Image 1 (cartoon, rainbow, N blue to C red):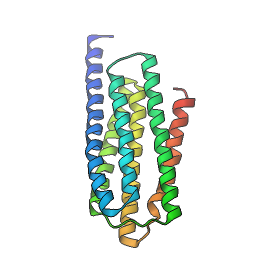
Image 2 (tube, rainbow, N blue to C red):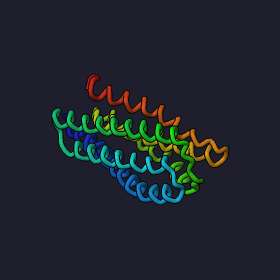
Image 3 (spheres, rainbow, N blue to C red):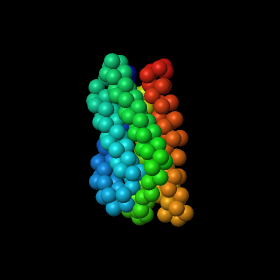
Image 4 (cartoon, helix red, strand yellow):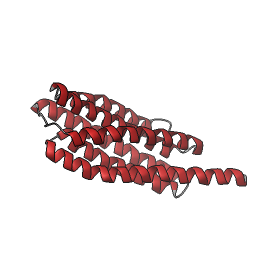
Length: 199
């Protein structure tokens, strides 16, 4: 490897860490905001989205750890930890969506929840794109895989947002849990790829 290649790699690793630290910080703040919004609106969706933020924090921590060292064993272990995060996310979405539909739970309106999930969706989509590009440039499957965790976080934020808006505007309380089932499929597909695919 030339000195130029080495310098480029160091720059990419720094960028990867910066993306993960940004994700980490955003989700730490998000847990507090979502706790306040969920309590005020009695919203299961917002409370559940807060739990999703914990999974994203765990995934970001795994990638920061993996980027601090090299080695195939470390990389495989990091991928498995992210796979577990996807599995937990799928279970959470399945349980939450089923419970909300079965009980017919109707949350209150939540302007704070609408605002936060809208901004979070944009931030997560931007971070996911950055991780995908940086992970590809580094040829780092851990960073690329965690980028898909971030993408799911953005999709979940968008689905919660749509559910909150439909509940506020049209009283369609079931829209959010219905969207959750689509994300269960996506998360389980990632689990299958990590544990049984080429990785």
